[in-house]
Amino acid sequence: MTIKMVVADEHTVIRRGICAMIADNASLALSFCGEAASTSELMALLARESPDILLLGYTLRDPQNGMEGLALVKWLTRHYPALQVMMLSPDTNPLLIRLALEAGAKAWLSRHSDEKILSQALQSVIEGEVYVERTLMNALFKGGKMTNEALSARETDVLRLICKGLSLTDISRRMHLSIKTVSAHKMRAMDKLGVKNSCQLYCLLAKTRMFDIAL
Image 1: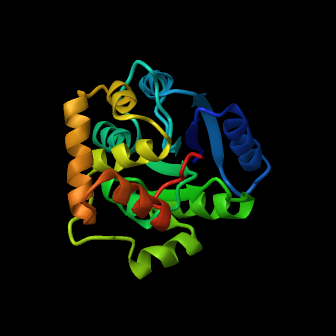
Image 2: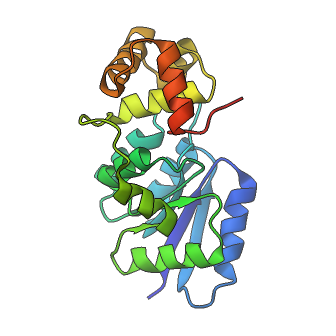
């Protein structure tokens, strides 16, 4: 039986590159039934098709849709329980990986993955297993959880966007939340991470490399 797959990422070169890598692998019985460059395109594609696997870029978003990151993963696994969601992300933070798996993702791949790793991940997911790259799995076993109280999905997304250089106002617009709510998420994250001010937070994020820092 041929397995139907879709790819959703805002970068055309990544979508087409993944399609080419899989097309060259005769051992995978996969057929592509579409690709999406935004969350709105993805929603339309899922409503139109019935894919078995979704390779989802973690940073996929849409200016008109506030869902992205962990919130999008949770929505997808809740509304499409049969869909196997595989994550593709530049972030390799163990905490973020753990939260994504807890949200329902079946695999986590870095953008440095080659054909072999992609093939292994797809085969694992097809066989009903969860896949994380070996180097990232080692980090998970070493303990990616920085505190006794884990960050929530919203708190994680707020910190990730802060690392991209966005102000609280920019984040509120992007996540379709009030500035007060975004600030509350930031403050709760700071409390869980044991920092007292924004300077300490930025230093911690830079030191631990929880997310890619925009310079």
